[in-house]
Image 1 (cartoon, each protein chain N blue to C red):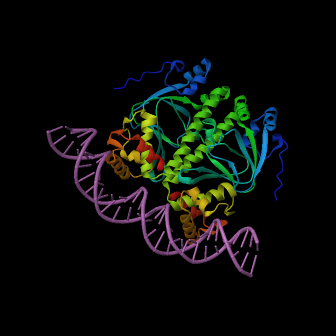
Image 2: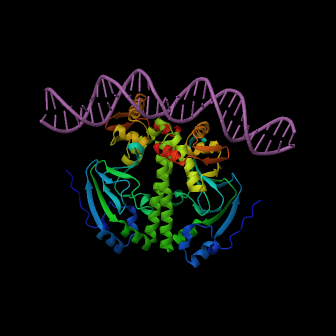
Image 3: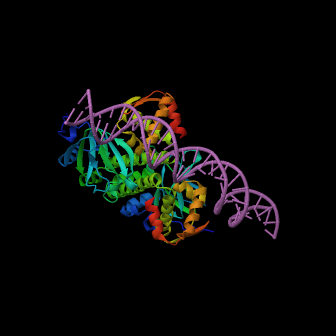
Amino acid sequence: MYTDNKITSCEFCSRCWANFKNLSSEELELVNKNRYEASFKPSEIIIKQGSPSSNAIFLLSGLAKVYMEGYAGKNLILNLAESKTLLAGPGVHVNSRYCYSVAAITHVQACFINFDVIRQVISSNPGFAAGFIEDLSGKALRLHQKVLNLTQKKMHGRLAEALLYFSDSIFHSDEFEMVLSRQELGEMTNMAKESVVRIIGEFENENIIQATPRSVKILDREKLLVISEKG
Amino acid sequence: MYTDNKITSCEFCSRCWANFKNLSSEELELVNKNRYEASFKPSEIIIKQGSPSSNAIFLLSGLAKVYMEGYAGKNLILNLAESKTLLAGPGVHVNSRYCYSVAAITHVQACFINFDVIRQVISSNPGFAAGFIEDLSGKALRLHQKVLNLTQKKMHGRLAEALLYFSDSIFHSDEFEMVLSRQELGEMTNMAKESVVRIIGEFENENIIQATPRSVKILDREKLLVISEKG
DNA sequence: AACCGAATATGATATATGTCATAAATACAG
DNA sequence: CTGTATTTATGACATATATCATATTCGGTT
């Protein structure tokens, strides 16, 4: 059972988007007044691709997967999102539609703030606007990198890279819980689930990792890095 | 021989970035004072991936290719850029590096404006900041779409989509000059140049297009659309 | 404990696509 | 005009990767 510690006010929230530090007390109060919290159980959908993007959504706790629904029902997982993350997607500023879906992996708490309020603060606070641009840019930059990974590396390189992503960016440890199924790992690296299984097996045989369906331990980070870079 | 009509002032420039319409006369003057024009011959590099991104670069005339230099010297052409386009890339706001390269296809005129000036105007003019966010977002959105295209469609679909891109977004005609070589078309659709040649041949046999090495005419747009969508 | 559906694992096979070799066409410099 | 380099075109072959079939393990439920 989860006890979602409700946030009393944005002003004292330690789990909000880093860019909120650029706001004045009055601006924070404005945001706070237009704030709605919600929590999600594992596998519940937080954002649905294509739906109108009226709210900026901030993850307060938990882990979620960000994915695009592609052709013939095939998904592409772009990344995982954790607390302090703004979820919205570039569609917001173009056609007011979410361009990707987000689903909870663990229990997730999220904060919804209407985009009109966000836009208002953007236009009154240049520092916040700059922070917003940085956030957008950082995500775009990572996507540029991901395109290269997906198009130019072979399966082994893509999977190695995914494992390093979990280790470095999400769990900050060589040993971590594997929160995605083999199927989802495939959706993340653009390959069939059978190929994921096979290559994980190969990595185990070569003593690069130690894996169970729900856990991974990186034994030889050097080798994994080489595989990831050499494609 | 080209006669590059020099721009006398930003205020009366008809070939600049649309977002400049949000600037006041004083702001335009500031921009105008910190402006440098340059022109490029076909195949010359306008932006080099990885180099420090000190300037925002605006295309005034001509056509250029935007591409990432990937692993093992393999390029990925992201899109073509024409006049009124801001070239900079998200790296500018993250690590001050260009995350892609840009090379002239035709003769190109460009305007260089130091990013300090742009940032100054962003922070003093909310409308301009919003326009900037829109530009960034639009590019990110198209990249999201491109990832799906490249990862989930087969060769025929990707090539069909590229041909439609030229027709719809660049030349606005069913008949257009093919400004890229077969090799470059491959870099754009992530396939070998031989495959490009073969599939263009198939499209010709099926009377979908009529092609020479330097020109394309779309004969059956419907079929091309279906191929592009069905992957 | 026994069952059931789902996820994982493994092998056989099919297919898309790249690579290599070579010929034909084209652009181009002298 | 002529020879040379580059691009385009085509065929034979190699390989990465998906698909399909089937076994096995696992998590949860009665």
